[in-house]
Image (cartoon, rainbow, N blue to C red; front, side, top):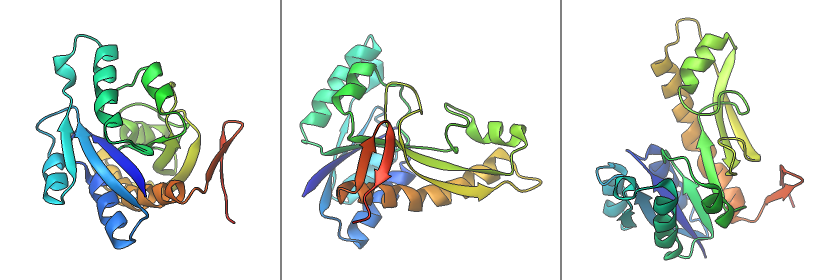
Length: 202
């Protein structure tokens, strides 16, 4: 039984999707904890209501990013995670933290990486004139939003789209994409070879 720790900063809609998928599909894993850097993150209420341990490590309580990451790592490791999942966790992580969880930390980013890393992805997609947008699940590396890609979902960009309408359409796909990618990890089907992810189909 693998342990999963999920990190959030807000309402945690992707976290909710993972909790529901794990229950519906009876994953051979348990979501051991949901941790936030914000005490007012709404997702903590959902996790607690579903019997999942919660914790807050507030970045505002630490003088530096390194000190915050060290404290966060200590709390995460208390749950003996096989996988750390970033689900709307709005912090840039230090290289030592990322290295500690190398090969066992996943993120979902609302763009078709390598397009539009960072923030304001929907606005950038609209401004680019591209015909499609989407979301990417990737392993986390020290370079922001540049880790090995596990899976992507694509949505069309329609005339008249706004950042809000596009974001909503992408989020629907995220809620399917992320559980599917994490299930592949749980089942031991994700292999990183020379910086690329291969899905073991056997």
